[in-house]
Length: 320
Image (tube, rainbow, N blue to C red; front, side, top):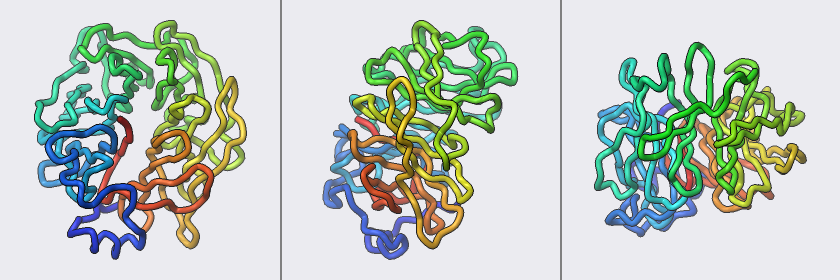
């Protein structure tokens, strides 16, 4: 999948075949013209300086996002619920660090936790950080001893611990429930078969299976399941026999009424991934439809290809 080179709004529309929507094209810089990011997207672009984190506010210009890092090596950015802070993974050689950076674009990244810490001996492959609602805690996935585990650490770098011990599952990405006490995580018996959804207590280490079945069509979770802001639904990207699509299901003690939201008539093998909620009735996601990686939005009441909102992006997250 190649990165779309942005030459202006007219070029984006012409290349995508979709109307760029959802942002004010005259709203100034991607961070809200002067560091006023309140809600919007954070994502990675792979440029001449390597992979770096960018942000674009709802009122900003999606063709001119604000660059938040310049060291390269950035993966899996996620924005806090108050829109002030981004967490991401920095990778360089055998070094893995969980870092944060402000969305203003005026601050330097801070290292929260590194795989060189003695509290995580043999750890590596950090991925999928997610903030709790107050942005005081980060839950992320980490490999140790050949097993993918969930861990938590306070945003100031203190209090690292694994969420579970002795679990029979390996874990992928997680997202917080609105109360901040639990995360919903993708799990399975191998890292390539994440087909179980589990509710995990962040402080207690409790583990409850929500579903052993993602629905009749989705086979495994590709990147992450995300809980809606009101806690009543979950969205996830499920691998199918024809690429990956976005699904939504009702969420309570079990998973129910799973339905496919995205589809691409006339295209085979499209990868729709990295879902995020934009309110309780709309999703955003990454799609390589047409051969380029762009961010789209779609109502959960509809089915289709979605509407282009940010061109040229990788691993997006919506928040604030």
